[in-house]
Amino acid sequence: MAVPAVYETVARTMPGDFALLDLPLAWRNGARVTGTQDPLIMFEQYYQSVHGKRLLGGNTSRNPSQKFQYFAEAAVIDTLIALETGHCLLYTSDAADDLLCVDLGGCRIIKKKNKK
Image (cartoon, helix red, strand yellow):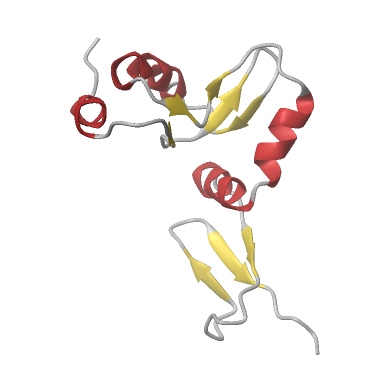
């Protein structure tokens, strides 16, 4: 099976201990999937044999349920998973413009106005 060239480039040009965030993003074990159900997430672990870096995502075994909860509640990770799986996001930034929502090709980001 061919490994995408980007992983060989990471192995060759990016030394050090760090984790890769592959997209699509998901965690799965024998009983549950958090994130996309794309089978590509299983290949990402195979690609790890080339680049040798830790992964943020993939297949796990015998992990406690709070591990899934931790990732589901981490803001950036939760946002990525929501966008990949077609779920809506609440958007609360006061620095944003006055649009009520933004359409992102089937996924809407809804700006929630704070009452003063």
